[in-house]
Amino acid sequence: MREHAVSEEEEACSELKKQVENAWKDINQKLIFSEISKVIPRPVLTRILNLTRVTGFFYKNGDGQKKKGLNKKIQSMYEIQSSILTSKERKKRDRALHKEKGRESRKEDERIVNLSLSDSDISNRMRVILREANNTWAIGKKLGFSVHGDEEDVIEEIMRAEMQ
Image 1 (spheres, one colour):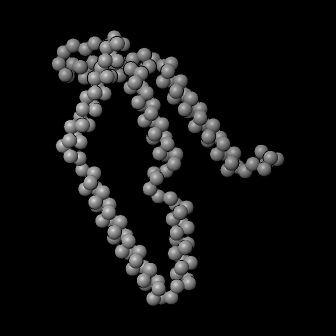
Image 2 (cartoon, helix red, strand yellow; image 1 turned 135 degrees about the vertical axis):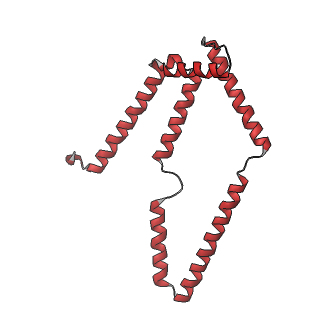
Image 3 (cartoon, one colour; image 1 turned 180 degrees about the vertical axis):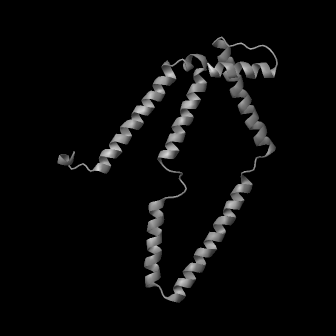
């Protein structure tokens, strides 16, 4: 490896990428050809796979909230400014930064308040969930699933199907 000017870090990164690719191949293989794919409806498995992909994407790219390299650059710019600015200019800059941080926290409070769900949002989400449940139930019927009895019996039957 040293002959081709490839560092150990690059070699480790390429090995990790290969392992991730192989893991995705295994996940897809198990989704299509395993015993579980015969029991659980395909749309449910597809949703699980999509959730896994999204989760992998978020973990691969960080949480999207903090960019550590950018924070280091900002900190170094702050230090450069501190060495150049007079004490009066530094105080003015620091007050402006302090005000800006206060505004950000108020904006965050406003976002949280705006995220509260209205009754129409809740009923709309309930309709969407009900529609998805009905579609899943219809697919289950086409695959030969049938459950008779009250709600507890249905839940127990679904749990047994998931365990198989």
